Amino acid sequence: MNVATAHRQVTASNGVEVDEGIRDLLEALWSRGIVTDFSCQGGDGVLAHICFARAVDAHRFVEAPGDFSITLGKSRAWVDFPTQLIGELTRRWSI
Image (cartoon, rainbow, N blue to C red; front, side):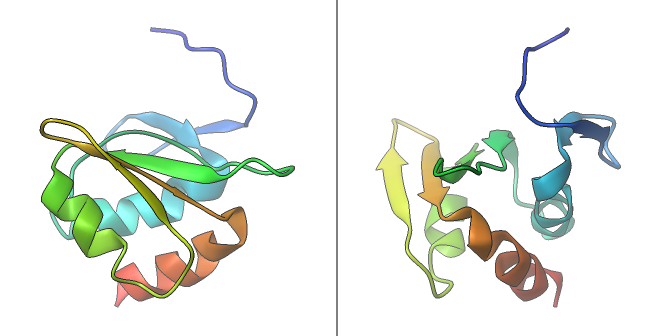
């Protein structure tokens, strides 16, 4: 399936195409068993975001220091955060 995107796409270890700027963070999350549905690396004044398949994982994610906005659905949750946090979050989840 081809999806229009504003960011360069790369293939992650699970075969999914993701934004290049958020791939390492997603890989770190996946290595801990956290399931994501979709994401965007953000940029140019637009927040980065990750949609988590389980709301409990979104709550774990926002325990990190930073400015987060979380939107809860019935079973999943969407988290928006400043793009400049991607590197720090990647390091935190890679430990």
